[in-house]
Length: 178
Image 1 (cartoon, rainbow, N blue to C red):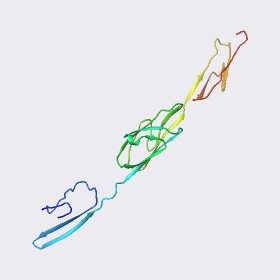
Image 2 (cartoon, rainbow, N blue to C red; image 1 turned 45 degrees about the vertical axis):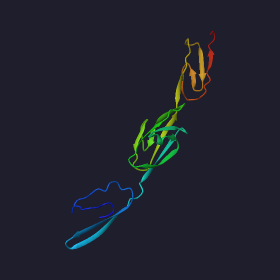
Image 3 (cartoon, rainbow, N blue to C red; image 1 turned 180 degrees about the vertical axis):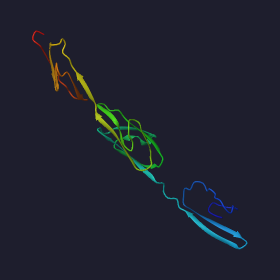
Image 4 (tube, helix red, strand yellow; image 1 turned 120 degrees about the vertical axis):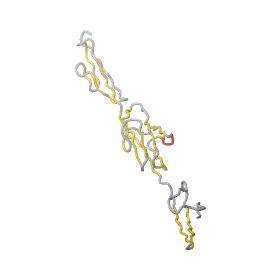
């Protein structure tokens, strides 16, 4: 026997040669009362199949993504290639001023963190929306005047929701005798 085998072997069964990292030819020669015979088998080891992970964002740009393992960290929109099948990856999208993280989509769903096991080319998107805040005003004492702003006319409509970063000018007008 050659190609990593040597000595006597059983006439049936199997034997492990260990992890194959390169192609190898095994030759088996059997010798008996009727003579000898040889046969060869070549085991071809191809390149490992690897995959790509694309990490994108929607509603925000240049989002910092923390990865575990850290090799998968980056700033959206980025791609990591050469990932072995079965690799477990955890991604966490960062918080952004004026934005609300609304969740993951694509090959991950839900909130932070995004946990996935690579089984093929995969793509995930960290989704953001503009944060909103409610501005509430009031007139005190009642009947003491009015407060106006875009979409506010108090008394009556005394609160409104605005996007983060919106400048709102309030105009207070006192009633007569105030």
